[in-house]
Length: 176
Image 1 (cartoon, one colour):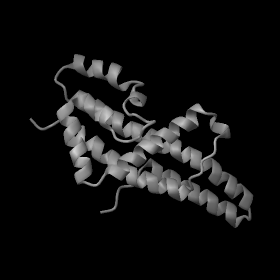
Image 2 (cartoon, one colour; image 1 turned 90 degrees about the vertical axis):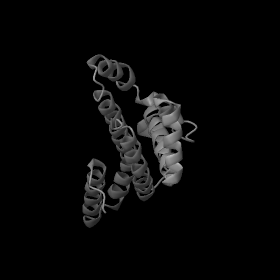
Image 3 (spheres, one colour; image 1 turned 180 degrees about the vertical axis):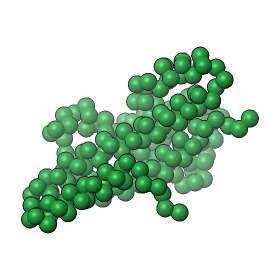
């Protein structure tokens, strides 16, 4: 079953159209310059998209609480401007720092299921993209270079998207 298109897929298609147009016009240098900048934009866009997916899942989980007080507490102290603290971006080995926030049994269950579903590579690529995003944002975006090709980034995105969708799904409130 093909995955539904999202904003990242649309962004990739838009860049391909621009690149093809530039090449048709004989503007090879501009097409290459566009690729160079697009790689950085694509990494930021993917990381932002993943942040939105995960924080929305956390928000939705908090909404399931019968208490508006709990929802507001979680929204203010666990969601708003907290995403960067959810994961260990530098080490990038696993997501235990995040899943452990929901309790040891949840952390263990998710870790087990990641292995069973063969999502370990997607998890690591998710963390790698997040780490690269942090480097771009905090170390002079305009002068930064990305050695990955656009196809490399797209492959990392597609593999990590599978993991992000799994993780977001696991955050849904359990059925009563």
